[in-house]
Amino acid sequence: MPASFLLELRTSAEAAKAAETSFRQEAARRIAALEQDRAFAFRRLNLMQVTADAIDAAESEDIAVASAFAALRSRLGWNADSDARLEVISHFGPVVQAMYRNSSGDQSANIHAALAEFEHWYSETRGSSFWALFEQQIPDTPVVDF
Image 1 (cartoon, rainbow, N blue to C red):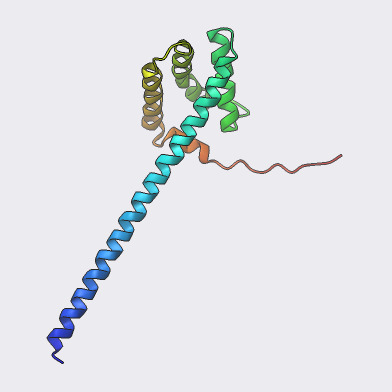
Image 2 (tube, rainbow, N blue to C red):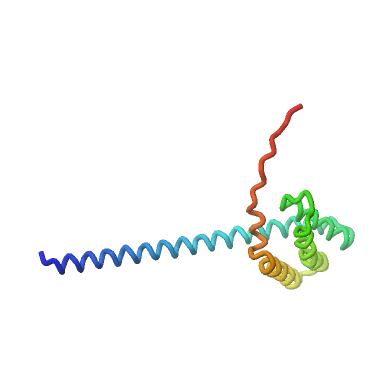
Protein backbone atom coordinates (compact mmCIF):
# COMPACT_ATOMS: atom_id res chain seq x y z
CA MET A 1 0.00 0.00 0.00
CA PRO A 2 1.44 3.41 -0.88
CA ALA A 3 2.72 5.42 2.07
CA SER A 4 1.17 8.60 0.68
CA PHE A 5 -2.30 6.98 0.82
CA LEU A 6 -1.90 6.11 4.51
CA LEU A 7 -0.50 9.59 5.21
CA GLU A 8 -3.57 11.13 3.58
CA LEU A 9 -5.85 8.97 5.73
CA ARG A 10 -3.88 9.88 8.87
CA THR A 11 -4.07 13.58 7.99
CA SER A 12 -7.81 13.26 7.40
CA ALA A 13 -8.30 11.39 10.69
CA GLU A 14 -6.28 13.99 12.63
CA ALA A 15 -8.28 16.81 11.03
CA ALA A 16 -11.54 15.10 12.00
CA LYS A 17 -10.24 14.62 15.53
CA ALA A 18 -9.24 18.30 15.77
CA ALA A 19 -12.65 19.39 14.43
CA GLU A 20 -14.43 17.20 16.97
CA THR A 21 -12.27 18.49 19.84
CA SER A 22 -12.87 22.08 18.80
CA PHE A 23 -16.61 21.49 18.55
CA ARG A 24 -16.73 19.82 21.96
CA GLN A 25 -14.81 22.71 23.54
CA GLU A 26 -17.12 25.28 21.95
CA ALA A 27 -20.19 23.27 22.98
CA ALA A 28 -18.89 23.07 26.56
CA ARG A 29 -18.32 26.85 26.62
CA ARG A 30 -21.80 27.48 25.20
CA ILE A 31 -23.43 25.08 27.67
CA ALA A 32 -21.60 26.77 30.56
CA ALA A 33 -22.76 30.20 29.36
CA LEU A 34 -26.36 29.00 29.01
CA GLU A 35 -26.18 27.36 32.43
CA GLN A 36 -24.98 30.61 33.99
CA ASP A 37 -27.68 32.61 32.17
CA ARG A 38 -30.33 30.22 33.48
CA ALA A 39 -28.98 30.31 37.03
CA PHE A 40 -28.82 34.11 37.04
CA ALA A 41 -32.33 34.39 35.57
CA PHE A 42 -33.78 32.20 38.32
CA ARG A 43 -31.80 34.04 41.01
CA ARG A 44 -33.15 37.30 39.62
CA LEU A 45 -36.70 35.91 39.62
CA ASN A 46 -36.42 34.54 43.14
CA LEU A 47 -34.98 37.73 44.63
CA MET A 48 -37.51 39.92 42.84
CA GLN A 49 -40.33 37.64 44.06
CA VAL A 50 -39.12 37.92 47.66
CA THR A 51 -38.78 41.68 47.19
CA ALA A 52 -42.29 41.93 45.72
CA ASP A 53 -43.68 39.92 48.64
CA ALA A 54 -41.97 42.29 51.10
CA ILE A 55 -43.33 45.32 49.26
CA ASP A 56 -46.89 43.96 49.03
CA ALA A 57 -47.22 43.84 52.80
CA ALA A 58 -45.90 47.38 53.29
CA GLU A 59 -48.14 50.31 54.18
CA SER A 60 -45.72 52.98 52.94
CA GLU A 61 -42.72 53.34 50.67
CA ASP A 62 -40.34 53.64 53.63
CA ILE A 63 -41.64 50.40 55.12
CA ALA A 64 -41.49 48.74 51.69
CA VAL A 65 -37.85 49.75 51.25
CA ALA A 66 -36.90 48.59 54.75
CA SER A 67 -38.72 45.28 54.27
CA ALA A 68 -37.09 44.73 50.88
CA PHE A 69 -33.65 45.50 52.31
CA ALA A 70 -34.27 42.97 55.09
CA ALA A 71 -35.29 40.40 52.48
CA LEU A 72 -32.14 41.11 50.46
CA ARG A 73 -29.94 40.74 53.53
CA SER A 74 -31.68 37.50 54.42
CA ARG A 75 -31.31 36.01 50.93
CA LEU A 76 -27.61 36.83 50.90
CA GLY A 77 -27.04 35.63 54.45
CA TRP A 78 -25.86 39.07 55.55
CA ASN A 79 -26.32 39.12 59.31
CA ALA A 80 -24.14 42.20 59.79
CA ASP A 81 -23.54 45.26 57.65
CA SER A 82 -20.25 46.47 56.25
CA ASP A 83 -19.46 49.48 54.10
CA ALA A 84 -19.48 47.31 50.97
CA ARG A 85 -22.80 45.70 51.90
CA LEU A 86 -24.39 49.05 52.71
CA GLU A 87 -23.25 50.34 49.34
CA VAL A 88 -24.92 47.40 47.59
CA ILE A 89 -28.10 47.86 49.60
CA SER A 90 -28.25 51.60 48.89
CA HIS A 91 -27.80 51.01 45.15
CA PHE A 92 -30.57 48.39 45.27
CA GLY A 93 -32.91 51.05 46.69
CA PRO A 94 -34.01 52.48 43.32
CA VAL A 95 -35.08 48.99 42.25
CA VAL A 96 -37.28 48.66 45.33
CA GLN A 97 -38.68 52.15 44.85
CA ALA A 98 -39.51 51.43 41.21
CA MET A 99 -41.25 48.21 42.23
CA TYR A 100 -43.23 49.97 44.96
CA ARG A 101 -44.25 52.87 42.73
CA ASN A 102 -45.33 50.53 39.94
CA SER A 103 -46.94 47.90 42.16
CA SER A 104 -50.46 49.00 41.24
CA GLY A 105 -49.72 49.54 37.56
CA ASP A 106 -48.65 47.42 34.67
CA GLN A 107 -45.60 49.43 33.68
CA SER A 108 -42.62 47.22 34.35
CA ALA A 109 -40.24 49.20 32.12
CA ASN A 110 -39.13 51.39 35.03
CA ILE A 111 -38.44 48.33 37.16
CA HIS A 112 -36.46 46.65 34.39
CA ALA A 113 -34.45 49.83 33.87
CA ALA A 114 -33.72 50.22 37.58
CA LEU A 115 -32.67 46.58 37.90
CA ALA A 116 -30.48 46.79 34.79
CA GLU A 117 -28.84 49.94 36.13
CA PHE A 118 -28.20 48.25 39.48
CA GLU A 119 -26.72 45.16 37.80
CA HIS A 120 -24.52 47.35 35.59
CA TRP A 121 -23.32 49.38 38.58
CA TYR A 122 -22.48 46.22 40.51
CA SER A 123 -20.65 44.67 37.57
CA GLU A 124 -18.64 47.83 36.92
CA THR A 125 -17.67 48.39 40.56
CA ARG A 126 -17.16 44.79 41.66
CA GLY A 127 -15.96 43.16 38.46
CA SER A 128 -18.51 40.36 38.63
CA SER A 129 -22.22 39.81 38.37
CA PHE A 130 -24.37 40.62 41.39
CA TRP A 131 -26.05 37.25 40.93
CA ALA A 132 -22.73 35.48 41.60
CA LEU A 133 -23.16 36.49 45.25
CA PHE A 134 -25.82 33.83 45.53
CA GLU A 135 -23.22 31.13 44.78
CA GLN A 136 -21.59 31.61 48.16
CA GLN A 137 -21.99 28.50 50.22
CA ILE A 138 -23.38 29.07 53.67
CA PRO A 139 -21.61 26.76 56.12
CA ASP A 140 -23.76 24.34 58.04
CA THR A 141 -24.27 25.29 61.64
CA PRO A 142 -24.14 22.35 63.99
CA VAL A 143 -27.30 21.72 65.94
CA VAL A 144 -26.70 21.65 69.66
CA ASP A 145 -29.22 19.97 71.89
CA PHE A 146 -29.22 21.11 75.49
